[in-house]
Image 1 (cartoon, rainbow, N blue to C red):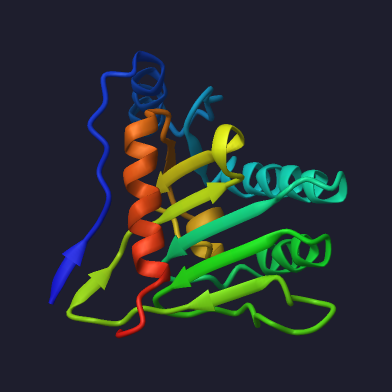
Image 2 (image 1 turned 180 degrees about the vertical axis):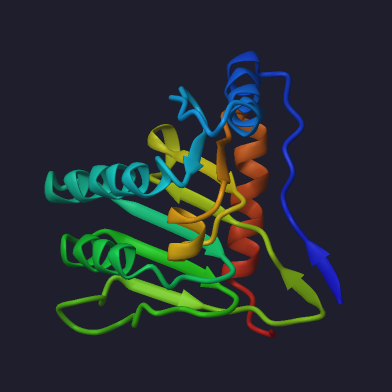
Length: 185
């Protein structure tokens, strides 16, 4: 069994300043910091995900293309399940690759008809977490340590890091699309 993950090596000063705050969080009696770029649990991830999903809902309601692509191990946070159902009802196209637990039921008319979910099981432990909101110039992309589970969003220290570099975005989109079009595993 092989374990796979995404790693970002960066010299982006503002991202690095945010990560310095994460380590300070551990050293200073869990003082809660504000971050400009990264998203952190347990204090900010869930509300930021709502905002990202809401942005796609607003785009869809305005008649624009709206897309969410998610790759994670497990999805069991019922508040986010409901939020994705809301996005689906608003016309947002949602593609999910979830290796393990998935409490969302895709393809239900009037509830989740715009949501597709697949799982890939192979000798590689698909451990990567990738969250993509929008596409093209409007695309926001994050790699993350957090699955969308209550324990990861409310009870653990987890970090989601934005991807700004267009070439890295292109590569991560290619990975997602390769997994999405897989028809073997």
